[in-house]
Amino acid sequence: MVSSLKRLSRKPAAGILYGLVLWAAFVACAAEQQKEVLDVPVKEEIEPSTIRYPNESAPLAWAMRGLFEDFEEVRDALREGQRHLIDIEQHITWMEAQPTDPKVKTAAFEQYAQLYINQINRFNEETDATLLEGHYKAILETCLACHATYCPGPMKRIRLLELDA
Image 1 (tube, rainbow, N blue to C red):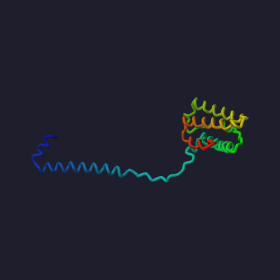
Image 2: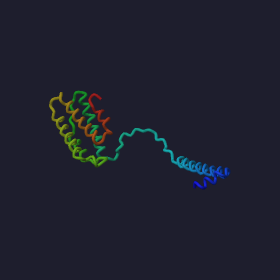
Image 3: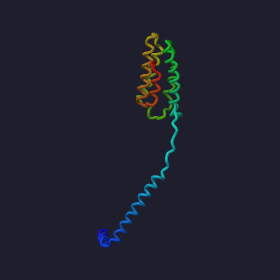
Image 4: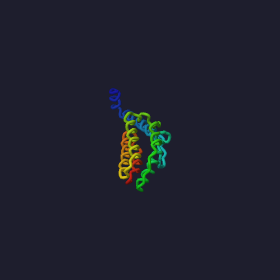
């Protein structure tokens, strides 16, 4: 290659021709690369939409939605100074439901679930109306702690259940 360049440097026309061939090859490669880039399909713009339930098919997600609705009634009753017992049977069903990600069913998950059930029982058994709010807040804190560990998506929604929300 070096010897051919030396020969070309002696003949100016050949050197220019050689340079033009190299330049043409470079431009052709660059154009091909640009064509490949331009041939990539452009993603269509997706109109923003509100996805209320991203995990439509997960039985655990559906069960949690039912719990949320029940807690809305409990929250509203407490705000009005009334008592609304929590249906413990409804709140146990989610423990057996299939989650979106089966790996979340760990020993810690089971401990959160048991703590949750214990706190619901304390809430339902409480006779002092002044302590009901504290039990209710403890239930929500357990929900938030578990969701912080396993599924943080619904935390904002759970916070809507707070009495001062």
